[in-house]
Amino acid sequence: MKEKKGIVVLWRSGVDLVLRSKSKNHIDMDVLEMGGGRWRFTGIYGEAQAEFKYKTWELLEALHVEDDEHLPWLCAGDFNEILFHHEKEGGVP
Image (cartoon, rainbow, N blue to C red; front, side, top):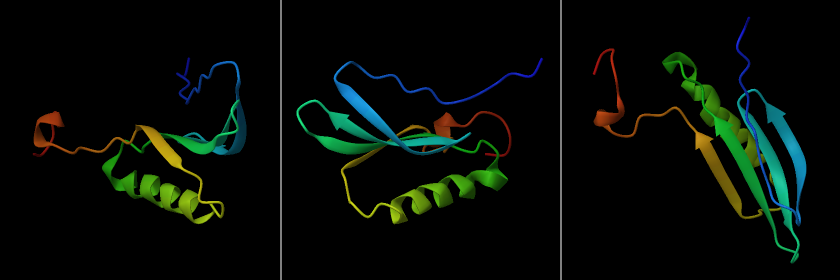
């Protein structure tokens, strides 16, 4: 049996979400708070293979370009990027 992977978003009562777009590597939505606040949330699961990492950054760039409202924007998730040498395991240093 093939393992299914995906992104899950949980939220509390009083918050509405409006889906902008989604793929196997992202979910992009507007967050509408009860008090009238509105902002944007993008959950990311970055490409794990080095030769495809550019796709994650191209996706984020495309999502940014299509935002004509300039809402406050939170991007969170697993970008699958190594920031520090001690985070790497195996392979060529």
